[in-house]
Image 1 (cartoon, each protein chain N blue to C red):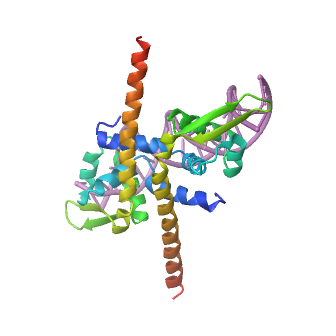
Image 2 (image 1 turned 90 degrees about the horizontal axis):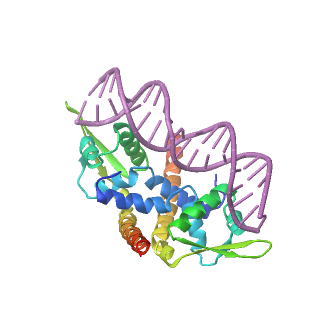
Image 3 (image 1 turned 45 degrees about the vertical axis):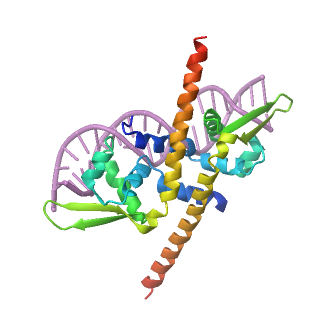
Amino acid sequence: MQKNPVQCQFVTALDSIVGKWKPIILYHLLQGKPLRFNELRRLLPDITQRMLTLHLRELEEEELVKRVIYPQIPPKVEYSITEYGMSLSPILKALHQWGATHVERKQLKKEINEQTETD
Amino acid sequence: MQKNPVQCQFVTALDSIVGKWKPIILYHLLQGKPLRFNELRRLLPDITQRMLTLHLRELEEEELVKRVIYPQIPPKVEYSITEYGMSLSPILKALHQWGATHVERKQLKKEINEQTETD
DNA sequence: CTGGATCCCCATCGATACTG
DNA sequence: CAGTATCGATGGGGATCCAG
């Protein structure tokens, strides 16, 4: 779609990371411990089953996440980060950090505004 | 919306960066040189006027981008990265880099698949 | 427990036309 | 040149139900 390759790389990278829940799913999986479907659901209180499934499939497709099925009743499926997925770790950490300071900054600005308004 | 603060930070960070065109706009502005509206349009061949305007406004709102109006005829408006916006530079660079290798990886895999299919 | 199948909404984006 | 206004299309995501 984009002719300029410089732009494509961004788009590609972001497509892998973006999606309403992907970064959060990755964040939790990057903690290292494999997580079951319902464990992830608990960690993402507001996600729907459907969305969790869809996003996990996409991450699996990109080989960022590994899906292991234990053939038993009741079913057990564990999701874990792949080695390749680990390469995203520094980026996500940085994003997380930046987001934190950005929130602080916004909060600070808000406080200043409220203060000057009452002058 | 999200109760878990850990998740909010991601969401916040990504909201600032994400949007179909934001990372690309930021990328170009991070080159350092202030750019006029139409210069940006030329750099983003497929973007519409409307989208460019909207995204620039959002970036301005987040104080990542600075808008300078030169009161003259014909109008001249220059957009440039703010110092605060510069703090995103390493993250965007990393994303860009990761995206590049990700594209390569996909391409490689595709080639391998095509090869084994013809066996 | 995991997750497929359906239906539907609405936010986002595109196209087009108009303006100081 | 640098936008704004309007309208319409599209698809990501939510809710719900069903199934191995």
